[in-house]
Length: 230
Image (tube, rainbow, N blue to C red; front, side):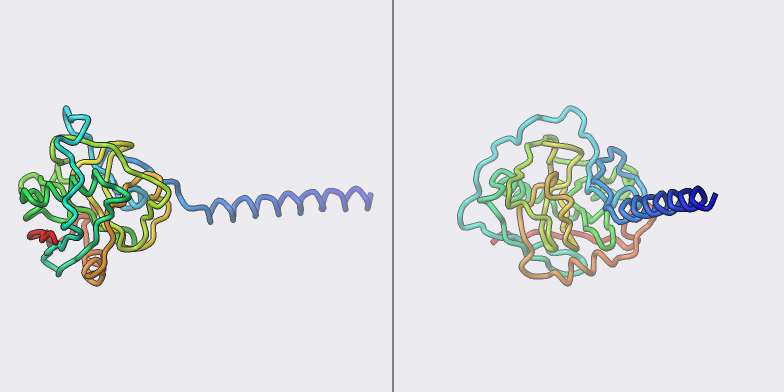
């Protein structure tokens, strides 16, 4: 009888230990990136992926994309909270760099807002619809009217200060971009990095600390007033 009781207790102890290890490993494992078409998702859902909504009838390639002139190596974002300067990475993402430069030169980004800010994650902007406060329900769905392919190689690194393209899935880049506020290695396989902040990381942090509503929109607008290309 004593041996049977001992065996039962042993089985319970082993099973309990196994359950604890499974629970501990499950709790410690980071959530896999999620792509959401609905950009009004809550912060809990949204922290995994900087996303954009689907553009109606998009072109499949970026029109007139060319490698930018060699004398344009960086950009300074003049925001309502300060300047952010980043260096382009044309060897790593030539088409993405060319697209950003082309849009910046045309004034596309002027007066847009950082419409999605998640503390401890990233600051997202680049949606032309954010120029119009009457379209706030559509913020996060705008773009240039076309989409183009990702440029993700072995050196793609969403570390703190990396500037990358937001998307709604593979090969759906347009105009929306985000600046990583912290290291986000879980984004490396899905989001093209095309620049790295060299000055103004304090401004990135200021934006990231801005109070937001339930849709991650800053309560006080953070405006990208203009961009200077150097």
